[in-house]
Length: 96
Image 1: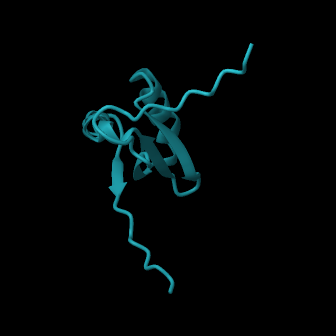
Image 2 (image 1 turned 60 degrees about the horizontal axis):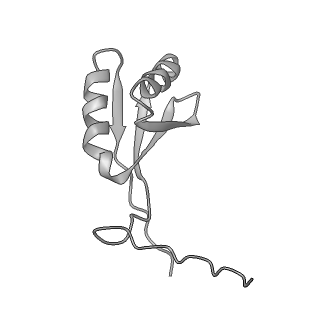
């Protein structure tokens, strides 16, 4: 009996899949980092939180590209519980 050929992956419907996840950078109080992580888990892991600097409470929120509106709506709801600021990333010039 011959060896089976590996299957070729089929292209995603509607085009190629996104290459990068969506990211938001947040600044909040250090005491609120754990609460935000808990609230994200209660939303069926809408996004995941990575703490960049625990002393200045700088965090990165990584989410699926198609869920950006849901993540922003979640952050609007969370603002009743804590003070969350979205930091706009500064574009870095490319080195020649």
